Image 1 (cartoon, one colour):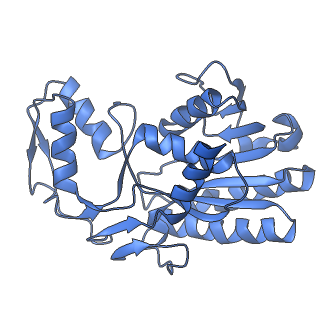
Image 2 (image 1 turned 135 degrees about the vertical axis):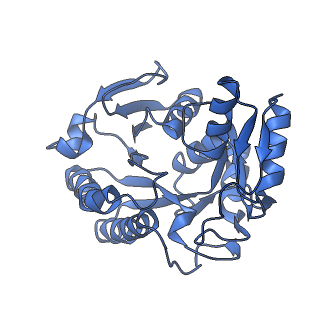
Image 3 (image 1 turned 135 degrees about the horizontal axis):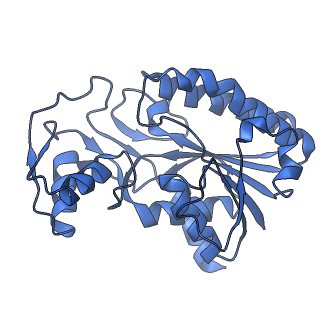
Length: 279
Protein backbone atom coordinates (compact mmCIF):
# COMPACT_ATOMS: atom_id res chain seq x y z
CA UNK A 1 0.00 0.00 0.00
CA UNK A 2 1.37 3.41 -0.98
CA UNK A 3 0.45 6.18 1.45
CA UNK A 4 1.17 9.87 0.85
CA UNK A 5 1.46 11.77 4.13
CA UNK A 6 1.26 15.57 4.03
CA UNK A 7 2.75 17.45 6.96
CA UNK A 8 5.22 14.57 7.25
CA UNK A 9 7.88 16.77 8.85
CA UNK A 10 5.55 18.09 11.53
CA UNK A 11 5.53 17.14 15.21
CA UNK A 12 2.86 14.48 14.66
CA UNK A 13 3.75 13.61 11.09
CA UNK A 14 7.25 12.33 11.86
CA UNK A 15 5.93 9.75 14.31
CA UNK A 16 3.18 8.58 11.98
CA UNK A 17 5.58 8.23 9.03
CA UNK A 18 7.92 6.16 11.20
CA UNK A 19 5.08 3.89 12.31
CA UNK A 20 3.85 3.39 8.74
CA UNK A 21 7.37 2.48 7.66
CA UNK A 22 7.62 0.03 10.57
CA UNK A 23 4.38 -1.54 9.33
CA UNK A 24 5.92 -2.10 5.90
CA UNK A 25 3.98 0.56 4.03
CA UNK A 26 5.32 2.39 0.95
CA UNK A 27 5.35 5.94 2.33
CA UNK A 28 5.62 9.19 0.41
CA UNK A 29 6.54 11.83 3.01
CA UNK A 30 5.35 15.21 1.74
CA UNK A 31 7.26 18.02 3.46
CA UNK A 32 7.17 21.78 3.28
CA UNK A 33 10.68 23.31 3.05
CA UNK A 34 12.53 20.82 5.30
CA UNK A 35 12.54 17.07 5.85
CA UNK A 36 14.51 17.13 9.11
CA UNK A 37 13.53 14.25 11.36
CA UNK A 38 11.60 12.34 8.68
CA UNK A 39 12.26 8.60 8.50
CA UNK A 40 14.64 7.98 5.59
CA UNK A 41 12.84 4.78 4.64
CA UNK A 42 10.13 7.00 3.16
CA UNK A 43 10.30 8.66 -0.24
CA UNK A 44 10.56 12.37 0.50
CA UNK A 45 8.88 15.04 -1.60
CA UNK A 46 9.50 18.69 -0.69
CA UNK A 47 6.81 21.03 -1.97
CA UNK A 48 3.95 23.36 -1.21
CA UNK A 49 0.98 21.05 -1.76
CA UNK A 50 -1.25 23.98 -2.65
CA UNK A 51 0.95 24.77 -5.65
CA UNK A 52 0.78 21.29 -7.19
CA UNK A 53 -1.09 21.14 -10.50
CA UNK A 54 -1.62 17.37 -10.50
CA UNK A 55 -0.86 16.24 -6.94
CA UNK A 56 -2.05 12.64 -7.38
CA UNK A 57 0.50 11.93 -10.10
CA UNK A 58 3.18 14.21 -8.68
CA UNK A 59 3.00 12.32 -5.36
CA UNK A 60 3.36 8.94 -7.02
CA UNK A 61 -0.28 7.88 -7.39
CA UNK A 62 -0.83 6.89 -3.76
CA UNK A 63 -3.51 4.43 -2.67
CA UNK A 64 -4.17 6.59 0.39
CA UNK A 65 -3.83 10.29 1.13
CA UNK A 66 -3.21 10.98 4.82
CA UNK A 67 -3.55 14.74 5.23
CA UNK A 68 -1.84 16.06 8.36
CA UNK A 69 -0.61 19.39 7.00
CA UNK A 70 -2.03 22.40 8.84
CA UNK A 71 -0.32 25.60 9.89
CA UNK A 72 -0.71 27.45 13.19
CA UNK A 73 -2.62 24.60 14.77
CA UNK A 74 -1.84 25.82 18.28
CA UNK A 75 -2.82 29.43 17.54
CA UNK A 76 -6.53 28.78 17.62
CA UNK A 77 -7.76 32.13 16.33
CA UNK A 78 -5.14 32.83 13.69
CA UNK A 79 -6.73 34.07 10.46
CA UNK A 80 -4.69 31.53 8.44
CA UNK A 81 -7.19 28.81 9.39
CA UNK A 82 -9.87 30.58 7.38
CA UNK A 83 -7.50 31.70 4.61
CA UNK A 84 -6.28 28.14 3.99
CA UNK A 85 -9.62 26.35 4.17
CA UNK A 86 -10.44 26.52 0.46
CA UNK A 87 -6.84 25.61 -0.42
CA UNK A 88 -7.11 22.35 1.51
CA UNK A 89 -10.37 21.50 -0.24
CA UNK A 90 -9.05 22.28 -3.73
CA UNK A 91 -6.03 20.06 -3.01
CA UNK A 92 -8.39 17.19 -2.09
CA UNK A 93 -10.51 17.85 -5.16
CA UNK A 94 -7.47 17.60 -7.43
CA UNK A 95 -6.46 14.34 -5.77
CA UNK A 96 -9.93 12.86 -6.22
CA UNK A 97 -10.29 13.94 -9.85
CA UNK A 98 -6.96 12.30 -10.71
CA UNK A 99 -7.73 9.00 -9.02
CA UNK A 100 -7.11 8.77 -5.26
CA UNK A 101 -9.62 6.36 -3.69
CA UNK A 102 -9.00 6.82 0.02
CA UNK A 103 -8.65 10.10 1.94
CA UNK A 104 -7.88 10.29 5.67
CA UNK A 105 -7.62 13.69 7.37
CA UNK A 106 -6.31 14.67 10.79
CA UNK A 107 -9.12 16.37 12.67
CA UNK A 108 -9.41 17.78 16.17
CA UNK A 109 -11.70 17.60 19.18
CA UNK A 110 -11.82 21.41 18.92
CA UNK A 111 -14.36 20.90 16.11
CA UNK A 112 -16.85 19.94 18.80
CA UNK A 113 -16.44 23.11 20.85
CA UNK A 114 -17.49 23.37 24.49
CA UNK A 115 -18.82 19.99 25.48
CA UNK A 116 -18.81 17.75 28.54
CA UNK A 117 -18.72 13.99 28.33
CA UNK A 118 -17.76 11.35 25.79
CA UNK A 119 -17.46 12.58 22.19
CA UNK A 120 -19.02 10.13 19.77
CA UNK A 121 -19.26 10.17 15.98
CA UNK A 122 -22.78 11.57 16.30
CA UNK A 123 -21.91 14.32 18.81
CA UNK A 124 -23.05 17.71 17.41
CA UNK A 125 -20.28 20.19 16.62
CA UNK A 126 -20.27 23.81 17.74
CA UNK A 127 -16.67 25.05 17.41
CA UNK A 128 -15.65 28.21 19.25
CA UNK A 129 -12.34 29.08 17.58
CA UNK A 130 -11.27 29.74 14.00
CA UNK A 131 -9.21 26.56 14.15
CA UNK A 132 -12.20 24.47 15.19
CA UNK A 133 -14.52 26.18 12.72
CA UNK A 134 -12.13 25.55 9.83
CA UNK A 135 -11.51 21.92 10.73
CA UNK A 136 -15.23 21.28 11.09
CA UNK A 137 -15.99 22.94 7.75
CA UNK A 138 -13.26 20.94 6.02
CA UNK A 139 -14.66 17.75 7.53
CA UNK A 140 -18.09 18.36 6.04
CA UNK A 141 -16.68 19.47 2.70
CA UNK A 142 -14.39 16.44 2.43
CA UNK A 143 -17.12 14.03 3.48
CA UNK A 144 -19.36 15.33 0.69
CA UNK A 145 -16.54 15.23 -1.87
CA UNK A 146 -15.74 11.63 -1.00
CA UNK A 147 -19.39 10.58 -0.98
CA UNK A 148 -20.02 12.07 -4.42
CA UNK A 149 -16.95 10.38 -5.89
CA UNK A 150 -17.09 6.98 -4.18
CA UNK A 151 -13.91 7.66 -2.19
CA UNK A 152 -13.23 6.16 1.24
CA UNK A 153 -13.48 8.90 3.88
CA UNK A 154 -11.80 8.77 7.29
CA UNK A 155 -11.72 11.70 9.69
CA UNK A 156 -9.19 11.08 12.47
CA UNK A 157 -10.33 13.18 15.42
CA UNK A 158 -7.32 13.83 17.63
CA UNK A 159 -7.27 14.76 21.31
CA UNK A 160 -4.37 15.66 23.63
CA UNK A 161 -1.05 14.06 22.66
CA UNK A 162 1.70 13.54 25.23
CA UNK A 163 5.31 13.53 24.01
CA UNK A 164 8.62 14.53 25.56
CA UNK A 165 10.20 16.27 22.58
CA UNK A 166 10.86 19.99 22.72
CA UNK A 167 9.90 20.24 19.04
CA UNK A 168 6.25 21.14 19.30
CA UNK A 169 3.78 23.60 20.75
CA UNK A 170 1.90 21.38 23.22
CA UNK A 171 2.08 21.97 26.96
CA UNK A 172 4.33 18.92 27.22
CA UNK A 173 6.75 20.19 24.58
CA UNK A 174 6.88 23.59 26.28
CA UNK A 175 7.64 22.00 29.66
CA UNK A 176 10.42 19.96 28.05
CA UNK A 177 11.83 23.13 26.49
CA UNK A 178 11.72 24.92 29.84
CA UNK A 179 13.40 22.00 31.62
CA UNK A 180 16.24 21.92 29.09
CA UNK A 181 16.67 25.67 29.50
CA UNK A 182 17.18 25.14 33.22
CA UNK A 183 14.05 26.96 34.38
CA UNK A 184 12.77 26.02 37.81
CA UNK A 185 9.12 27.09 37.49
CA UNK A 186 6.56 26.77 34.71
CA UNK A 187 3.55 29.16 34.66
CA UNK A 188 0.39 27.09 34.55
CA UNK A 189 -3.39 27.25 34.71
CA UNK A 190 -5.41 25.77 37.57
CA UNK A 191 -5.09 22.41 35.81
CA UNK A 192 -8.58 21.29 36.81
CA UNK A 193 -9.88 20.49 33.31
CA UNK A 194 -10.20 16.78 32.55
CA UNK A 195 -9.20 15.71 29.04
CA UNK A 196 -8.35 12.67 26.96
CA UNK A 197 -4.57 12.25 26.89
CA UNK A 198 -2.83 9.79 24.58
CA UNK A 199 0.89 9.04 24.47
CA UNK A 200 2.70 10.04 21.28
CA UNK A 201 3.66 6.51 20.19
CA UNK A 202 0.15 5.20 20.84
CA UNK A 203 -1.25 8.07 18.77
CA UNK A 204 1.00 7.14 15.83
CA UNK A 205 0.02 3.47 16.14
CA UNK A 206 -3.69 4.31 16.10
CA UNK A 207 -3.41 6.60 13.08
CA UNK A 208 -1.42 4.01 11.14
CA UNK A 209 -3.79 1.17 12.03
CA UNK A 210 -6.80 3.25 10.97
CA UNK A 211 -5.59 4.19 7.50
CA UNK A 212 -4.17 0.73 6.78
CA UNK A 213 -7.73 -0.65 6.79
CA UNK A 214 -11.02 0.31 5.12
CA UNK A 215 -13.64 -1.68 7.05
CA UNK A 216 -14.21 1.06 9.64
CA UNK A 217 -14.53 4.58 8.24
CA UNK A 218 -16.11 7.98 8.92
CA UNK A 219 -15.19 9.86 12.10
CA UNK A 220 -12.75 7.84 14.19
CA UNK A 221 -11.52 9.09 17.56
CA UNK A 222 -7.76 8.75 17.96
CA UNK A 223 -7.87 8.68 21.72
CA UNK A 224 -7.31 6.95 25.03
CA UNK A 225 -10.99 6.75 25.83
CA UNK A 226 -11.08 8.23 29.33
CA UNK A 227 -10.53 11.62 30.99
CA UNK A 228 -7.70 12.65 33.29
CA UNK A 229 -7.20 15.90 35.14
CA UNK A 230 -4.68 18.15 33.37
CA UNK A 231 -2.73 18.83 36.56
CA UNK A 232 -2.42 15.11 37.31
CA UNK A 233 -1.27 14.25 33.79
CA UNK A 234 1.32 17.02 33.69
CA UNK A 235 2.65 16.22 37.15
CA UNK A 236 2.96 12.57 36.10
CA UNK A 237 4.71 13.64 32.89
CA UNK A 238 7.26 15.64 34.92
CA UNK A 239 7.83 12.71 37.27
CA UNK A 240 8.12 10.09 34.50
CA UNK A 241 10.78 12.16 32.74
CA UNK A 242 12.68 12.96 35.95
CA UNK A 243 12.29 16.69 35.41
CA UNK A 244 13.00 19.06 38.30
CA UNK A 245 10.76 21.89 37.07
CA UNK A 246 7.72 22.82 39.19
CA UNK A 247 4.29 24.00 38.05
CA UNK A 248 3.32 27.52 39.09
CA UNK A 249 -0.44 27.10 39.35
CA UNK A 250 -2.89 29.89 38.53
CA UNK A 251 -0.54 32.09 36.50
CA UNK A 252 -2.69 31.70 33.39
CA UNK A 253 -6.49 31.68 33.23
CA UNK A 254 -8.30 28.66 31.85
CA UNK A 255 -9.48 29.26 28.29
CA UNK A 256 -13.25 29.87 28.30
CA UNK A 257 -13.86 27.60 25.30
CA UNK A 258 -12.06 24.59 26.79
CA UNK A 259 -14.33 21.82 28.01
CA UNK A 260 -14.25 21.00 31.71
CA UNK A 261 -14.34 17.24 31.14
CA UNK A 262 -14.23 15.69 27.68
CA UNK A 263 -12.92 12.48 26.16
CA UNK A 264 -13.27 10.39 23.01
CA UNK A 265 -15.48 7.36 22.55
CA UNK A 266 -12.93 4.64 21.72
CA UNK A 267 -15.36 2.03 20.33
CA UNK A 268 -14.16 2.31 16.73
CA UNK A 269 -10.42 2.55 17.39
CA UNK A 270 -10.50 -0.42 19.76
CA UNK A 271 -12.16 -2.51 17.05
CA UNK A 272 -9.58 -1.36 14.47
CA UNK A 273 -6.69 -2.32 16.78
CA UNK A 274 -8.30 -5.67 17.60
CA UNK A 275 -8.73 -6.44 13.90
CA UNK A 276 -5.09 -5.56 13.22
CA UNK A 277 -3.87 -7.95 15.93
CA UNK A 278 -5.93 -10.77 14.44
CA UNK A 279 -4.34 -10.44 10.98
